[in-house]
Image (cartoon, rainbow, N blue to C red):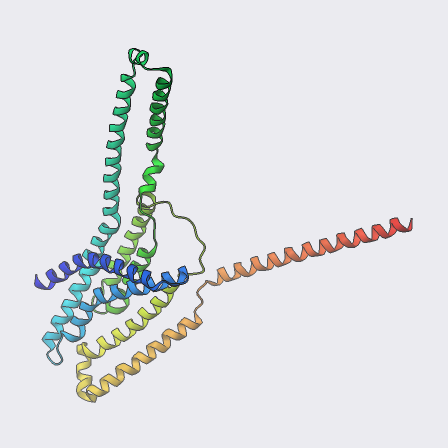
Length: 347
């Protein structure tokens, strides 16, 4: 209970802490006064991801390397169990609680605002109907023509405004603006869970896959029901998130090699044979080899599939061919016009 209770409480508190840290990151970004919107967005992403990485992964790294002890195998096993239980709590309870905070809580708050505004509209409509009923012919006879006309104009304008206020477009304007930052942050964090600690909890990729499938439907629901209609913007890629993914990959290689050398029971006999320094050198060598493989794949594997590259080349060729044909046609028409002018001048 203690091994599962503390990570559960931590998983419920961390989304609220991340909300506060995001506000702090936004405040720090405003103080820095960046020149362009791209710089502003880049530094904001770095701050928020750094805060989140420290909040979520500090306990995992502590249980993996510091809280396991050095020589006691039982302490190492207890530390690994704590890492597995904490990771399981983060990718289930903490993530689902974060979904409730980011998706359902704003939607419930919006429904409450709409319900309150509709009650106010109903009250205003009752007051308007009461005012229109009070404007009886006997009362109209007591007023002058100018006052009667002004009173009718006021009531008519008020009814028009109330009818416009009942349109659905005003309910959509009250919705919060859509921001893809949360989706990117979720994807990178889940990627870090899989790459860094799936060796301790092998079911992590399956749970993360389920979370991604669930988030796909929740994002569609959020776009249709819980957010303002976003504007389509062109972009050349995912921006600074690409560099964040590369950093996470390097951290994952270092983490897996360290877990293999320091906490794996299969390397205990190797430590007795070649010593602790030999195991450390072996882990460093394996880590360098994996980093080399990572950078080779990064340089050789293209970001676009071959079919997309072929389609881009084909469209570029068609555009150049079309432009060349237009230039040839224009040149031919101009030469034909000059010959006609020469013939007319000769005749």
